[in-house]
Amino acid sequence: MATITTNAETQNKPERQQHSAASLNHLTTESANEASQGFDTKSALEIARIINHEDSKISAAVKRALPEIALVIDSVARSLRDGGRLIYVGAGSSGRIAALDACECPPYFSTPPQAVQYIMAGGPKALASAVEVNEDSEELGQRDIARRRPTRKDMVIGLSSSGRTPYVVAAVAYARARGAKTAAITCNQNTPLADAADIVIVAEVGAEVISGSTRMKAATAQKMITNMITTGAMTRLGYVYENAMVNVHMQNSKLVERGISLLMRSCDIDRETAVDTIKSAGRSIPVALVMLKAGVDKPEAVRRLARSDGNVRLAIEDTTLEL
Image 1 (spheres, rainbow, N blue to C red):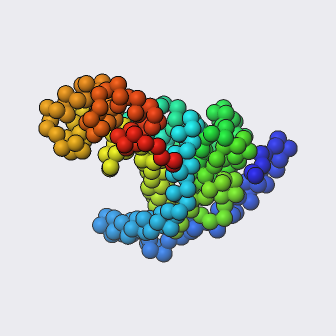
Image 2 (tube, rainbow, N blue to C red):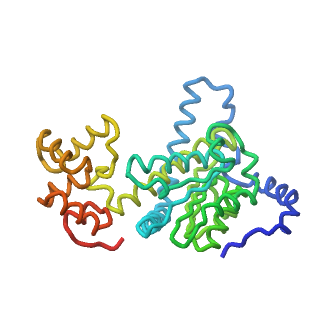
Image 3 (tube, one colour):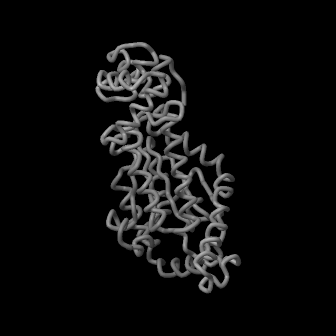
């Protein structure tokens, strides 16, 4: 079980920070990349080719972490199904990736506003302005996660390319000590963040084109992984039918058209029938889909969705399935 830093321990912070700075040099994400030597002398096309070549390595790095990603997908799905939350914690580029994923869950999957959250070192203002000094504070990391009152129902995921960001490590350790399930997403092996978490996802993307610029390959890997986690969890919860986002909020013309097309394609009906059914369903695509697929009226479709906890396929089949 991870431990919580006490006030007495913070007295050695300068010494600890010096040690951390030294250990930073041994991280693969901080090492020099031979493929980009003389980068500043290259033409625009050569620069693009070098970056593209390095980016081609990211998918393979993420692929090696798929078993751990799957574990996190199921853990997130269980937390959300049981009324818990997914809480991302990050700093700098990692925090911005976390914030992006959290903010996109409500419009794409109609999750409640509090179901998927993010905590950013430096607060929301750090999304647009650099407030990187906060990432060195264990106390702030503990304070910010403590304000969310994590419980055993929650899943807390810390993102840090280096795996050593004090703010993130302290927040994850605090959440774990309070009973929350925890995970780490990092790009280096054997890190303090890995020690603090229950499940460790490591995407070893190697040295960056510009040494230490983890907004590049490392951040791209983290974006790929967070995409997998939330998309996978929402799919496991039944918010996706076949490969369509059935829980999407129809709040603009594009999303309305997407909902109409989804019904037409899934149920092999014409546009007029799709539009009429959406209106009858109270503009709810899940309700409309259950009505059409199961051949039931709106009240029965609503009851089936309630019995299946919003799982569209189970509502259509009117059965139960353990995640």
